[in-house]
Image (cartoon, rainbow, N blue to C red; front, side):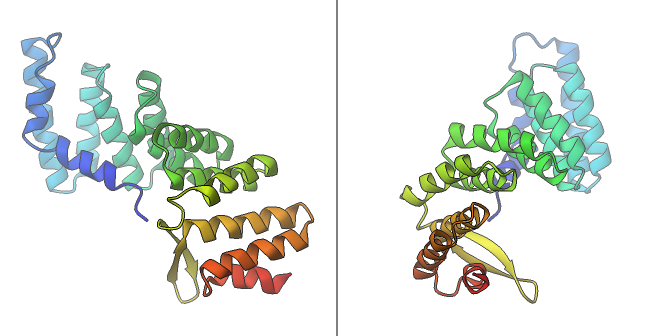
Amino acid sequence: MNKFKLLIGILVLLASPSFAQENDSTPSVTETVRKKNETDQRVYQLALRYNDFAVARGKLLELMERNPTNTRYGELLASLYFDSNQFSGAALAALDVLQVNDRSTEALEIAAYSLEQIGALERALTQFERLHLLTDDIFALYKSAYLQYSLKKYEEAMNSINMIVKSSKAADQKLGFPIENNQTQEVSMKAAALNLKALVYIEQGSKEDAKKAFEEALALEPEFALAKDGLKGL
């Protein structure tokens, strides 16, 4: 599941000719600033075209400094850092955007995933929870549940898992898990949540409940490798 399709769409949109025109409609932008913006946007677009991300990032930084209230530049900078696996920079850029616009779903996504990548799980959890509250995205809810489990917040994890299991979206949405030979197995979000529920039960010492949860997951996805292994481990 590619959670950054939306970000890619924004990247394409802002790299189009309408990018400069839209920004220039702001009344507070002077003619001098407008011309500098247009020049930097053209260089940014060329840098993207030639995969020169260092130049693209540099131009976005100049645009951000010149237009401090325009969070789109920060969102793009965060996405470029993320795509380059520079997760610390991506997290900082996204968090800066959220200081100005705390409802930016793009910044919330990047901040959540980047913070998780650098091991800041508590802060990542906060962003995933906010993302779910803002968008009702069930994948963000699953990520919240998994981080709650990882942080030993078992009661919170169970609440999140039960929300997923009850959701009408959970049976249709798929989640990929790595299996042997570098393959990925896709299962329903509901089965994934039940598998996670079993893991929480195991941590709580409730093996019978864990067995039941694994069996419920396998009833939905009979070939679910992780659930099979978990049940066998019991």
